[in-house]
Image 1 (cartoon, rainbow, N blue to C red):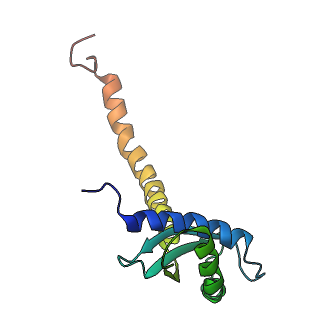
Image 2 (image 1 turned 135 degrees about the horizontal axis):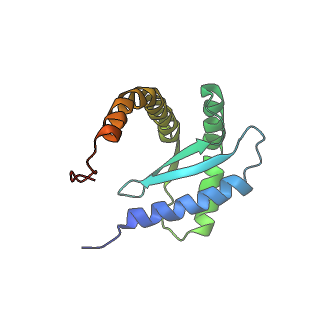
Length: 145
């Protein structure tokens, strides 16, 4: 059994090439700072789903506008990829917004909030136990001092 599938190798190469092409070749002023977070290619190499994130922009209207720009430029990007990568058939490019980064930030904020709200309760509960240890003449291991 092979260690890497061909579709994985093509997806990695597409991700690298698309990141460079989007950054350097697309001159549309409406396009923000786009990062290609992942690429998945269908088994027959007919379609490539490209997941992108936008730096600092989570507004749904702005995301939609950036995706529209990328979809309009898909033909140009596909022709440039055909010149750079040696493939018989260059996959059709389908762009999607990757919400995992935004979702991760929200979850991280919720966890931080829960930890912060739990800290005052822990310090109130820990104080009586610390006083009891100080008055106990035995060491931590249970032997007398």
